[in-house]
Image (cartoon, rainbow, N blue to C red):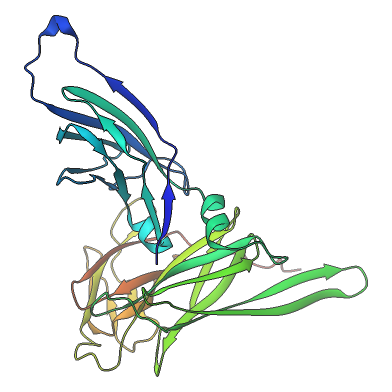
Length: 321
């Protein structure tokens, strides 16, 4: 079930100037921007739709959108974005009045982390952070209901008397009918491990981290054992250095597979016949810092990725002569 967020919206209406004598159409134009309050900046590729019509538009690199040919009348505006889908949040405005032959300006936003956590998590004496996400079937991208999501981390404290102490913590949740889960009462900043399991199927153990104000998101792709193509995923891409130059001879492999590829002179690689699901891609090359990239693999289409390796700077211990 999605949380419905009704926005307090900023609307401005501009009527055409009489001196221009525009041709009356009886329709309205909607223009505006979508801000990403969760990550900062503008929401790119968000879909803005006009209720009761077939009119919609996608935001550009500056979060702008424009929709024309909107029938006059009152319409609700709805915002769609992958972030909202992961969080299970629906953004819908109150009815907006559209007068014929006018332009309506509208400011929309993806809710902030504090707004989402306040709506999703009840107040408790535990930590202020939360982790919210989805578990999907890797080969169909359908939600997996009843999957267990387990999170664990180690809290390190240093005291004058006790010295350094390591306290393990563990939390778990079960996905609902829409494949969604939430873990509330977590630390405001967290570096942990996570995995999802359903029956005998599970994802690998994966690293996850988030910073203040304390909202993390994770969509986990689970390979189901009865899938006929559980090992039919493909990942391909290119390995480059910090300046974008292709690197030949880098070793590329998935953490759960014995298969490996070596990049060619163009820095490209292909790994075929891999197991679907959320995986960790390991990239190594002598003289460069190793890289680990979390990927969601599916047999539906190849996964393409660009991996950037930083130069390795060795630090040698001092030697007394």
